[in-house]
Length: 282
Image (cartoon, rainbow, N blue to C red; front, side, top):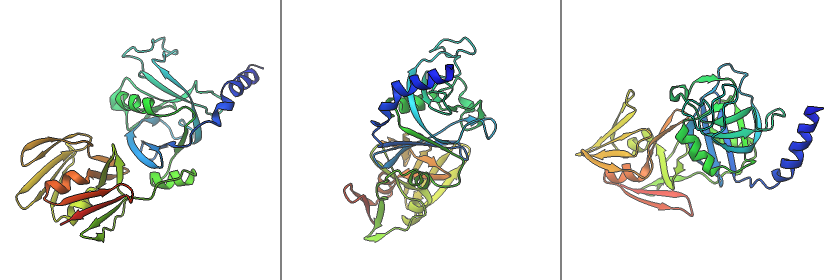
């Protein structure tokens, strides 16, 4: 009887509102790589590392809507109040309607252990760094679909399989000739990022990858640039420069901001937002 009452309450309160979900947004969580992708207006906006279930079946797979957004949710099991630094839920909670739990059991939330992110550690929820979940919390709409998968496919392939309408991929033309890319460029913060190896090879730059510090060093003639993954601080010939968008790694591919690296190495860059084409002139 209690379950029937809860179901009726849920349908009464939330059911009519599902029809008003915009469909402009989609979240994909891939347990294979422990990454979350946020799509909006037909393109991949940002990806984040996440922590998922400590065993394969704990984080359920399927497509589930976000049915509540809660700030400073208490951790009832441990009697820890919301907002407490010891709260394992962090300070943001995006509740998912999974198996009749109405957003009370499964969620995307923050954490009190940053070292757990990227690992298989949870009892079923999806953990994010606190600064990442705050970014997502402020942007994602209620009733946005969340697709949880365990897949070797790209995020775009998974999005298409969910019926999400993607914008055409960004093209790169070098001296009028289209550059062949194994992985499509991405747009983040209105800046185009392109696979690292492809752009540096095309520009004739030697590149080094320092795994421990996740630092990229590229040199061409007398020019040298250094970038660090997830950092907006870069250098050109030892001079510090602040980037609009940091280099990132998405599904084992390293992306760098095409305008900065090209201009820093002496190549002119133009961007046609209507045609979604980057023009590089050697």
